[in-house]
Length: 194
Image (cartoon, rainbow, N blue to C red; front, side, top):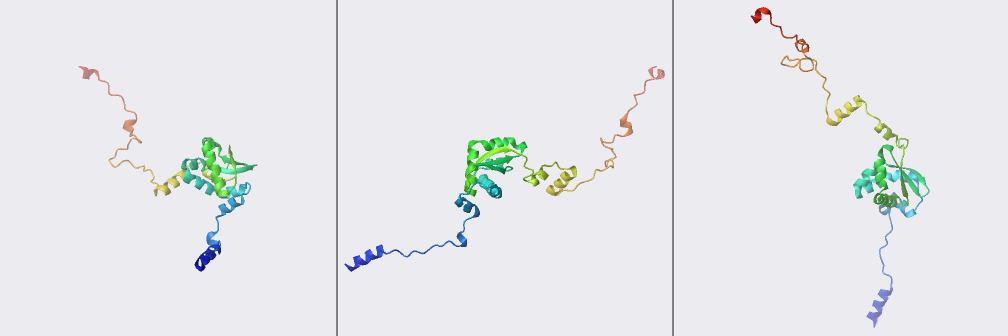
């Protein structure tokens, strides 16, 4: 009877399990801390985490990542997150409004921030929010284009030559005096007709 009693006692006694205490190596990522808190919409947090939201979207749906690449969170209106698109990107704004794209953005925001947002897409001037975009959108001068081409292609500028071609032919750009206005052919004289 003693062995059965010992087995019963072993089953009744709590087993000594190793305790797992979270240490620094188990600390959750900042986005997950926000998610656990279930915090209300916070524009500053959304703007800080927007690149991570876009990256998660790009990994799951590259086309939607391209659509949202230049969009920015611009305003909170109640539970609505206003996502701004440059006025030149109305096509992308309309693509973002498609139900599957909107749902993917809602899920990415929730997963990265813990915030439940209803995206509203609007055309906005984003240069105030991202001044570097205003600089990037400005047309380049001819000198800037040449500098960019030279640096991109490791090229150098070659000055145009004013000298004639090696065979002495002035080339099509510089017609000689004989080519500019040829005199009419001589008319035959009476002696030549006879």
